[in-house]
Length: 233
Image 1: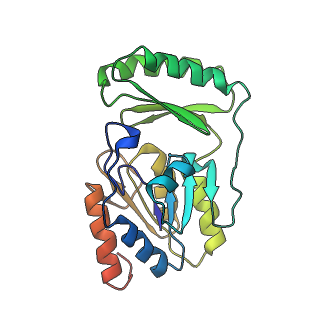
Image 2: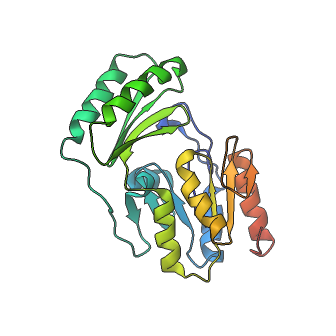
C-alpha cells in the first residue's frame, strides 16, 4: 500500500503547516500496517521529518521529498545530493515570496517551493521565470503542483521509490497506490502496470485505474477494505 499525504489522506490547506489530521487517521494507518504485514508506506513530497511530526505514531515506511528521502524499509535513507549552489535558488525563491503578498516560501531538505493558493494570479508569471531559471542548472527540474511550484532533483521520483520498495517486499505482492498530484502519476502507473490498483484523487488526467473525489472518500475506502477482510478493493 503506497499512500500520498496531502490531497490524499488529508485535505490540502492554504498553508503547508495548516493541514488537519483526521482523528481516526492514526488508527487507520496502524490497521493497514497490520493487515499488510508492514507493507504500507507514506509517499510524499514533504520531507520525512515533517511527515513524522504530523504522524508521530506511524510505524511504517516514510518516503519523503518525492523519493529523495526514505525512512525505514531497508532502503538507503538518502538517494541523491543537491547541487552545491542550490542555496542560490533558495535565496531567489525566498526573496520573491518576501516581496509578494500571499505567496509562501517552503524550504525542504532536497527542494524549494513557492505556494500560490492565496495569490493564484501570481503563479503563471513566476512559472515562466522559474522555467528559464532552472534551465541553467543540470539535474534540477520544475515541478508544477496544485497552486505550487517546486524546484527539485530531476533524478528522483515517487514511482522509482515505489518500485524499489515493491521489489524489496516481493514480486508476489500486489501494489495499491493512491495519490492526487502529478508527482503521484509515476507510482499510480507502476501499480497498474504490475497488475495492481492505482487510485487518482480528484480531477485531471491520470494513469490510474479508478478515481475518488476527496481524502475523506480515501479514508472510507481503506476502512471498508479493512472491514471486508483486506480482500482486493
